[in-house]
Length: 240
Image 1 (tube, rainbow, N blue to C red):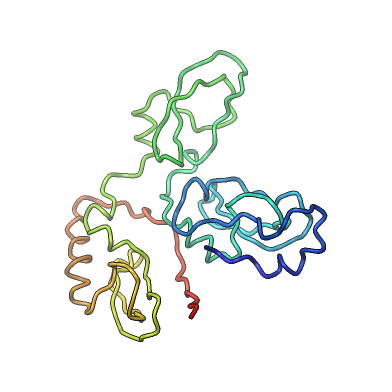
Image 2: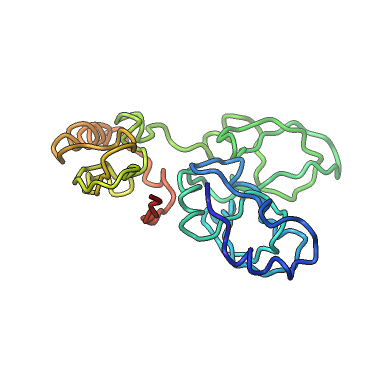
């Protein structure tokens, strides 16, 4: 779980609304589209705490000022924490990221829109308002324009090759190797001796044999270049 920003505790007496700061929303680890696609919400209080949210329209993490109470879970202490939670959301064309309007302005029509949460085209009744370009006459047209190409990386290599680097929970210092999906290469890291995940190899040869060779076999199938959003390396803080 992401820790509470220390400034939020310092500014607690300044908040005008009596909501306990410990109740501020905290996003769970991993990539959760239902969290990352929420609109930014600074909350009703008046502190100005620099925080970060995932912007569905730019498909990147951006800074905003959090008021210090309430709001929603799309609220991270640092850019790195936001990126760690949301970087796996797939890239799609700009108009496919737009929300649709269900206001009625004229004749009702059955159309399709691309739902970024489900990564699928869904039917809805358009009220004739032209407030969003995310509208298509049929499902095939919608999917053809918005859906990521077939051939995701995970179809060519075992799924654990795309698990994040995990140093584990203990205090040993053993050199191991993991597959970095952004660089498409096996890289060294320090394993602490217990815990972690299966993206962990004793030598670089085994890592390449399992993850890299399988990836190369899929190149002839034209894998999408923009499957993953930009991601910075996160330095984990250990607690002993």
